[in-house]
Length: 116
Image 1 (tube, one colour):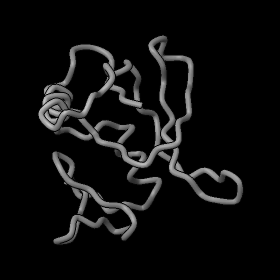
Image 2 (cartoon, helix red, strand yellow):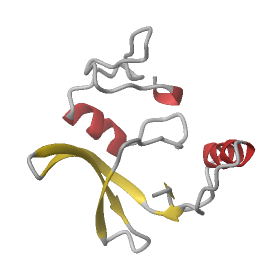
Image 3 (tube, helix red, strand yellow):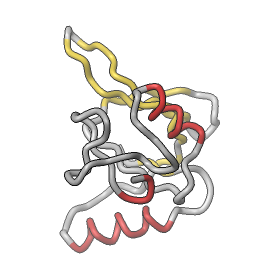
């Protein structure tokens, strides 16, 4: 699944698409969806990260299992991203606090880019 927020394509999505093309990786065109949350949900006795998204109509909610979430938003942290961090006890002081290996306060979660 490759999604981008509604409106003009963010510059970082263009960079990601170009990098993939340079490595001969074909990406689908991003679907227009809005990230609502990222949660751990139980599936067959195992906790799996799941992204909750709103579709084009901004009403229909969809949940997708994820292995990786790459944020391609502008440098400011949206309320949704802040709530995701806060709800998962990730230390945030204007940026996500990381150590030298990009680990957050949860050693299973890494952060980099415009939020770290």
